[in-house]
Image (cartoon, rainbow, N blue to C red):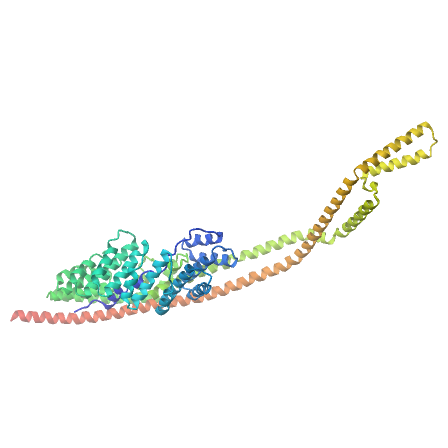
Length: 621
């Protein structure tokens, strides 16, 4: 008698392990640093590559004074999304080593470290890290911790501890279904089918219509159905399996299990209903391949030997054709078709964990994409390949755009040359020495005027001219006879001279203060001019030196980019070869499984012939 495939059973009971374990961290309630908000802009668009770039720049420039620890946690999580576990571990460990960080930072760091160990299959390390998460937590941290902790306990077979943990965990709306699913798996493994069914029913009765929730309900019904099947409760098994959506991703496994539930109850006629439907589906699915043998097996049990023989022959032909398609796919993959399709359909978003392979094509290289993507190793290989392709494009873009710095440098050189003649003229005809000499002379004059009280020393040019004229008139009058007219002119000359003298004496203090101010301003202007000329001299030296310095930095970055491109190209080629190797290995394993099915079908066909002959002989007697 054919038995339910061990591989299918294993995948059912390990469904909890495949649940997404990434922590749904709460979004920041406020953004205090502009650069942090810029990083979040890219983060919430799932553009994680640009998030890393902008966050790294902001950290290097010390532009995140209000988001230090949060930025470190974000950087660690983003690096982890690209599989850079070592770099992420270093960041989280540094946060833990800092005793000044509060408990919430330590909890999130331990949670991330637990995830890193879990992804590396280091269950002991993951368990040690997750047990350090304690005390008061945010709802997202608490539920993410409970989910990962329960997965670790389930993988270690510690079902009772997982049950106790999950029963005492208060969870948010998003994680409720996942935690209930894990709780149902733990109870089912402990033999508590009644409470497991209750947990799964609470998931299946959820009115949420999201594709994610519908898939989880299908998983719950599938796990419950196969659990009942193993314990011999065929009616309950069939009822649970019939709840799985016929158009869902798990419908093939559900149809296969429903058929075996009826077959175990010796109701082969009923078993034929799901098996016949399943056998008409794509033979690339292992469940469909098994149904090709299950249908004639049921017909044989119903003593419909003629139809059973016919279906066995059809099954052998179908399996042989499927093996031929596998060979064709292997040849196509070796020819590079899989890699070409991945490159042509690359989204170019560099979106870390959330990359999706969604290729609708009749290419032989992609015929088995669903079964291949069921493998974690293959998923990781595809993710890494697409990440490398994205990095190649970015490096090529940077290598192209860096030439703009050459243009900028050339423009600065041209502008420098255009201003150089004027600057050279100023430097060569420096007026400062003459100005300093004149300033010193003025200062001495003012000091002498102030010490002697010479009010005429502060006369302006007009007043000096008038005094000179009056002095000349006085000399001329002195040489004339002393007549009344001359006497009158002398009186007027003295009067005018007195008026000017009186005005100079009246304004002496004001003029003295103003002259001091003007000399001080002149001193300031001279110092400023001196500084400007010094800067101009330094600029002449720095600019010419800077040109060569900038040129050297640009050349260095070009060389670094070139080296990165070479390394990325090598890694890209190597990752493509690994991806092809993984795909071919999986398809070769499927060929071996089909060979086993064909041998079983031929053996069962021979047995059916014998049973048919024996049955005919018995009827003749």
